[in-house]
Image 1 (tube, protein in one colour):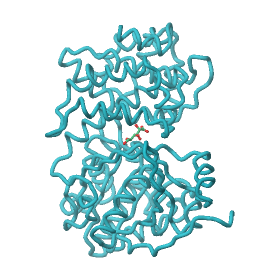
Image 2 (image 1 turned 90 degrees about the horizontal axis):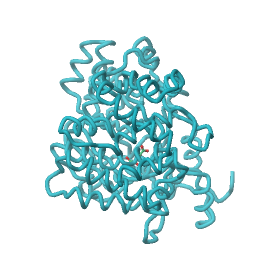
Image 3 (image 1 turned 180 degrees about the vertical axis):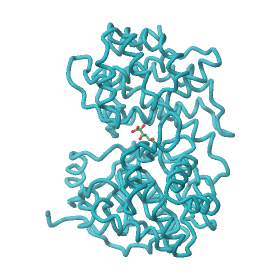
Image 4 (image 1 turned 60 degrees about the vertical axis):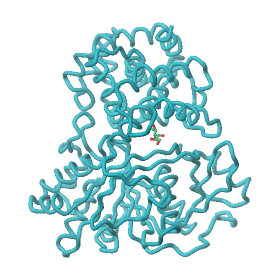
Amino acid sequence: MPDNRLTRTEPAPKTGIVHLGLGAFFRGHGAIYTEEAIAASGGDWGIIGVSLQTPRMRDALEPQGGTYMAVELGPKPVPPRHVQVIDRVLVAPEDPQAVLDVMTDPAIRIVSLTVTEKGYCHEPASGALNLTHPDIQHDIANPLPRSAPGFLVRALQARRAAGHAPFTVQSCDNLPDNGRVARGVVLALAREIDPALADWIGDEGRFPAAMVDRIVPATKPEDITALREASGTYDAAPVMHEPFRQWVIEDDFVGGARPDWAAVGAQMVEDIAAYEHMKLCMLNGTHSSLAYLGYLAGKDTIADTMADPAFAAFVDHLWRAEIAPGLTPPEGVSLADYAAALAERYRNPAIRHLTWQIAMDGSQKLPQRILGTVGEAMAAGRPCPGLILAIAAWMRYVGGVDEAGNPIDVRDPFSAELKALSDSAEAPDAKVAALLSLRAVFSAEQAAALLAPVSKAYATLVEKGAKRALAEILS
Ligand code: CS2
């Protein structure tokens, strides 16, 4: 280990939060808000991080006392921040009981989650818990869980047995009505294990929804090297984030107990739906569209796609003509201003957000990012050729070969099924029909409505390539 390793310089705050899923996003967003909230208003809200899959983050952070650098990449140079709010990191597969023990401690009042869409083990199309998911089947039969819903349910079971109040379950993932999804999967799993437990969680538990926003790409080896060269200190797990951040939180916590996030800019509101719908459709919907079309056209990052005038005009068209007309913005928010700010954020040349990273897990993302908007537009008789093209681009992408004939490393819980469906037919309409038959993603009704337009878009993509296909929509 290099001798100039980053070390903790301040004692960790007393812990009150367990966070499941310690990726770059949480460390660049929720952890920083929480550290600032403690500095502003106090409170025992230090964080115990839990990795549900690999020991990678624990191994990186442990020698640094749980601390890491957060580097803001924007037009103005800002000194990096040494984040010290994480007390320690546990690795669930190594010792699931240790994770349950900390979650059962009554000092822990919030369990927050950034486990990505697939971590909820739900059916993306319906939002319901997938009871056939292997981890869920495991967690029904075994007291030591594997899945995020499993840890939540088993820890709540232990708290109930010990006579403690439940913790608040706070989802920070990009899912529509993420609080309701979290509540739904927890109650469904609890009901399988003990119906009385499910009733107790239903009555006493709280699952506030949230809209979270900050672009925090996965940290790359070159980020680590650059920071080391600039600072002289070695940090094995820094995070690189954009200046912008937003957190809109439904203010519904067990006993009202939570950090004073409002003191540091979070919006505590009664209903987050309008914010979340706007963000998922305007930001994540176009992010995914640019990711598939951009990747196929050979663009590495979102900033690269935005630097191409054809793509910049295309995304502007999506915002103006296809997405905004179906949205009711939160009070006082202008969708045109929101879109202009997004374009600036996407253009940020310092943020290297790979199209490949955003393209990951499309089966889990498409429904809330794109399919909902398309369904509403079709019902209202509004054409949405750009979003239809984005769906076709996803289909092309999961086929596993790019426009230059190179293989694509497709990461998706359904990657094998998607590849098999894509390979099952040659003709564009048969291929599209096969992919539309995946009921976890498309309802039967959606599949019927999408077949003709997506087949046409797919054929254009194959014939002309992504860039010409999107340029045609604008002409
Ligand atoms: C991105 C998001 O990776 C993705 O799918 O669309 O992580 C996006 O960067 C965040 O939601 C921004 O808040």
